[in-house]
Image (cartoon, rainbow, N blue to C red; front, top):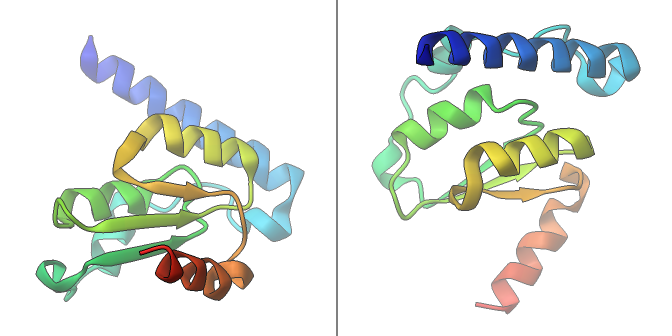
Length: 120
């Protein structure tokens, strides 16, 4: 039953992703989310023991985020920049307190990190 629920959730996310591609193809840029294999390949060679802050741009439904969480140190600060409000809500419910999801674009990254530095 649990495997069936996971499979249904995966298909639901793919359809959700497709819907957002059709709604705004220049922002979404893909018909389906990246595969687990692509995510693994992307992180080959990363020294996770040294990664204190990890930033992901445009996480969508969180395929790469899942891999990051699997490998990252428990004390790593993981920040996701996402433009699509529906993805922001999905990511927050899916990953909870383990990630910080920001509903903004990468063009604001420098300003956001400057503000974070001044408050620490």
